[in-house]
Image (tube, rainbow, N blue to C red; front, side, top):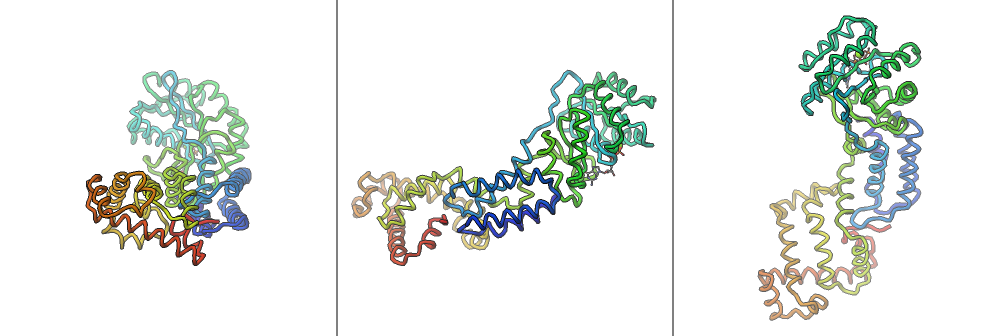
Length: 448
Ligand SMILES: Nc1nc2c(ncn2[C@@H]2O[C@H](COP(=O)(O)OP(=O)(O)OP(=O)(O)O)[C@@H](O)[C@H]2O)c(=O)[nH]1
Ligand SMILES: [Mg+2]
C-alpha cells in the first residue's frame, strides 16, 4: 500500500540522504522536489504547506547531530513532520453506557458496509465485544442482505426487522442492542449534494446519539475526499475516520490530507476486501512506510537517544586540535558506542553498510563487539586518575596491576593502549595533511 507516495518521497529525499555537507540551497531543492511529490500524490495544498513549512524551519534551524549526516537528519525531520500531520495514534473510544453506538456514514461505495463487517469482526476478536450490526440502508436493493451475510460470516448479531423506514430501524436496533456491547449502524450511501439523505443522517444522529460518528472514506479518491469530509463534518459532528482501499493504487493523498483538514483522527484503514483486512491506524508506521527510509529514521533516533552531543563535540574538537586524547576521552567514546549497542547494531542501521557487515559478521557475532567494549571500559576503570589522564605512565608494572584489577589479561590492555596511540597518531597525521573531512569521517560525524 501507498507505494506511489513512497516512490515519490523516497526519490525526493534520495539526493539528500547521502550528503555530508548540506547547504540551504540543497534543502530548498529537496523541498521543491517534496512539494512536487506530494502534489502528484494528490495531497491537499493546506496539508502540504503545513508539512513543508515545518520541515524547512527545522531543517535550517536544527544543529546537526554528530554521528549522522545532515541529509539523514533532514530525512528524520520529514518523518517527524509526517507523523505530526497524520496525528496521534487514537484508538476508537468505546467507553459509554452500554451499548456503545458507532454510526458509519460516507459516500456511495466508500466501503461503509464492508467496514461495518470488518469492525464487528475486529471488535469481537480483538476486544471480546458482543456486536450487533444494523443496516439503515433501505434504498439500495440488497443492502440489508449484504450486511446480514457479513454478520453471518463474522458470527455477530444482526438486526432482523421488517421496517423500511431508517429511523424506525434505528429505534429497533437501539432496543435490540441492549444485550450487546457495541451497536454498529450502517447507513445508506449518499452523494454529498443529496440534501434529503444528509437530513436523514442528521435525524439518525439525533436519535441514536452515537458514541462515535465515523466517516468512511475511499483513499483512492485522493484530495477529492477533502470536500466530502468537510460536507459530512458540517452535517454531523464527526469523531473519526476510517480510510478504505489503501491497498489499491491509491496515491495516498487522502491519508495525508484528511486528518489535517477535518481535525478528527483516522482510527482504522481498510487494506483489502477481506473481513480481516482492517488495521488500526498507526501514524508512525504509516509515515515510515510512506518515507521508505526506516533505516535512517531508526539510526537518527538511536543516535539522538544515545549520544551526549556536547560531549561528542568537545571530543571531536580535542581530536582535531591534535592535543592528544587520553583514557578519559577514550572512555567517553567507548561509553557512547556502548549506549549505541556497539558496532553490530550500528552497522545494521547504517545505509550502505550491508557489504561491510558480512565481512565483519564473524567478528561481531554473539555480541562480541559489545563484550569487548565492556572489557575495555573495565580496564580504563581500573586505572588511577593520573594514569587515565596521562597514558605514558603505563609501564609494565602498572599494566599488570590494571589488568589484574579488571580481571583481564595484560595483552588486552596492551591492545587498548595501542588503540589510543593509533587514534592520536591519526589525529597528528590528519592535522598535518589538513584532511578535515576524512578525519571527521573517522569520528563518524560529518561536518558542514
Ligand atoms: N480493495 C478494497 N476494497 C474495499 C475495501 N473496503 C471496501 N471495499 C470494496 O468496495 C466495494 C464497496 O464497498 P461497500 O462496503 O459495499 O461500500 P458502501 O459504502 O457500503 O456502499 P453503499 O452502501 O453503496 O453506499 C466492495 O466491493 C468492497 O469489497 C478496502 O479496504 N479495500
Ligand atoms: Mg453499504
